[in-house]
Image (cartoon, helix red, strand yellow):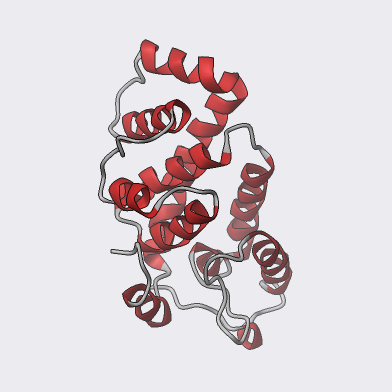
Length: 196
């Protein structure tokens, strides 16, 4: 069973503050992909958080913190998110962050290669390192000392921390997205590039 998206007209008093905070944050941050329907219904993983506003508020708080905690170059950040999306074949994540990746200058060919589960050959050293560390974390086990050191040398400790937190955060978001898929988004997937 999938959770349905809750329209603004159907929000409870407990859900309304979270909805308003998410709507403001999402509208301010994301303009390159569809996040809401015409009536203001929030799509994507955010819609699921409204069903349990106490938990949703906590998750939204972490999401906002992740948005503020920026030490990686934006290209590397988007590559990490796409690696996680590709690993889980997370349709909305791939759809949304392919759009963000395009806006940061990642080429269509690079996006297609990453979302098919492979590392593009023409990535910068930073982007290649971000890809490799994210893929290694997703494959389990301990990150090798050389891979960790390479990331430290390029990004510093705060950047490596962000990279690891991003992988963990999007691994957490992915199953929520799977529960919150709707017919409206499924129709959107069929017409969107970069979504499988």
